[in-house]
Amino acid sequence: MYFLIWGFLVWLGATIIFRFFGHFFFNPENALLLLLSYLLVVPLIFLLTYPLYKLKGLKKDERLKAAMFIALPGMFIDTIVLVIFPEVFTNLLVESDRYFGSWLLWAYSLILITGLSPRKE
Image (cartoon, rainbow, N blue to C red; front, top):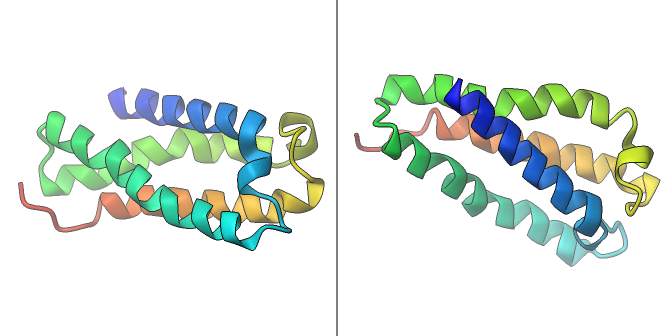
């Protein structure tokens, strides 16, 4: 339950940030910022997951389950959010929805990968 709540809070925080500042990250006319949004989420995801795994004392085999629980709330909610994209992200161009969707898949994949990576216990 802890990791589901954490996943929801991460989703909520990211959604609020992109609701108000997403036009800086997902502007199809600014390839550099688009690229940076894909690159900068890598260390951010690691900062949002690995310390938590360590804090909770998770063994290697428990990390995948925790990673899935972190990713699932956002994945479920974003299936609806992406359908009503223009209403939720009023500051983003409708044409940027594909970049946003792609970025979401990238971020959720990174969360799941943190559950697979071989880190010392």
